[in-house]
View (cartoon, protein in one colour):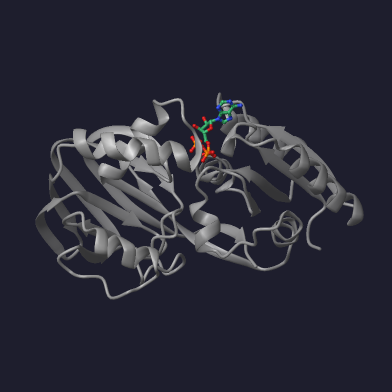
Length: 290
Ligand SMILES: Nc1ncnc2c1ncn2[C@@H]1O[C@H](COP(=O)(O)OP(=O)(O)OP(=O)(O)O)[C@@H](O)[C@H]1O
């Protein structure tokens, strides 16, 4: 074991579940291995600064996070410039990172992985100076997330309820100008995705060649909504129709939108944007993995 002091960061509202079991089970594991235990509960206010103070005040050398993708993103931002490994206990409504790194479903196994020795140094995307660990997009999915965040129904059911009004109200397709180091294209798209990994939190494999530590991200131009192709992504089939999605690898990109378009990063709604500047921070975050 190469750590002594562990900070467990818990988002009490993530996934709308009680976190007492997670907190007590992590405590038991740490008692067994005689590691120091520190708990930080997020408040949604100024959490980044408070997490950094906890790390410095207690000489933390391993961080665990129990929350959804939004909380994991927040913790990654707080710790990315420290030499720390991040262990994940997936506890959100959608757990995109857990899906992509095959994290176990059972709590004890999740904690063993989070406190284990195996790790991967993953790339981070940086979009208009905000980091992204797995998926970001402009267009109809971000509209769905905005409508979900403004509604009172939470969890997967909440997303399902918002899907019909989002489809009816959306003004898709959107007009984009895509510039990379060696690519310049105008595109009409329902959704323009920026992917560090293969899958969305639903398990949809939309970016079959996505590798989280290769120094490259993929721009996904979804040209139309196609139920057949969406079902293929959910069944993990990788022969996607190029008329459905065109995939462009890049290290750097600038996206310009003709009108402001809804934008999300790791499942958190950011706002409507007309320009997104994207770069990659290679192997910037150390994640504990199975
Ligand atoms: N104590 C708190 N009270 C209210 N909101 C909080 C608190 N702590 C964190 N948050 C908010 O929780 C959000 C992140 O939630 P996260 O994505 O991790 O979980 P989730 O269950 O997937 O969320 P959602 O139900 O919104 O999809 C952030 O917007 C953050 O500001």
